[in-house]
Length: 186
Image (cartoon, rainbow, N blue to C red):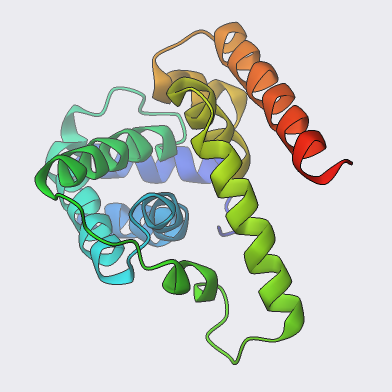
């Protein structure tokens, strides 16, 4: 994300809510990457993530005039649209194979080195452990740590209190620690 201050972004958001498409373009540029990552982590397919990310911003543009948190960071709003788009897509498809190789190569398209292979194994172990958590714990951890949202943003996105989100994260992290102790003895 850019180095705009929260006051500058609040002004951009206000302009976008008022219908300024150039201001919405700034929001698009500012939040495209975190929204794309959020979606890609869930669908694990580049083309599908591209399509869904565009769908999210198209929907947001159409509905932004009704956006109520005019002076706040729009990322939780965009994540909510993204989460719903992913859920809708998952309902539409059946038994589509996940392309894990694409997921492993997302940050770097260069040849895989031993270090990259080890990182891929660690990512897969984390994904596997996360998948065993209850849905709300997994979602709270993903939003907070993988999507780098604040506790307040996670709470707003999930429709829960900040305390409830902290408890979900705490329980989820404790379960992950236990799982890794059992698996790796560390």
